[in-house]
Length: 209
Image: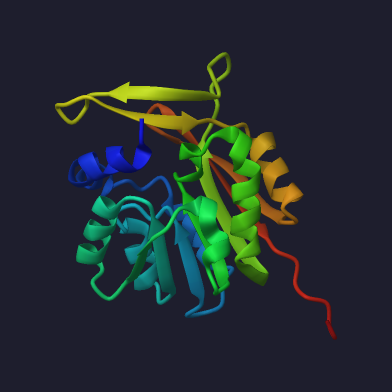
């Protein structure tokens, strides 16, 4: 099961299905309001660019990365002036820039949990000192597996995706281990899913350093 191939296959259907989602707006606004006016944001796992377009509309300079060229093609169509690149969130060390904010919504959940700590550290490392990181994942339901390959057929055909699920405490631990000070850690119900959304700040450089 290759998540890139899956999203390339379902790209148009997935984009149409999620364009009107709104569970994320309140906490995304909390995150954006922490950033400097017109600041830079890295959208990690930007998908079809819906959130990149939203943040660009708020005046931010957004760079979107994703591994699916099918989703990136839609993102470039939706936001022609956008900066979208094919890049995995497991390879952020290849980026030469750092950002006022890093934003990973519904993307870390496709990474095996044994790799999640390293990915969060990479996300934190490309956040400017004093900048902020936002991550959203699906909450682990009591008694359920914390990782699974999920088979779905809601678009009229069968496809599979890997998911990992978290508790608020697990997500907070990744932030703390990456040196991020937690600003908010919330839960939001959307249909049958509870979304965990966490915002943390990277320490500012000490004066004279």
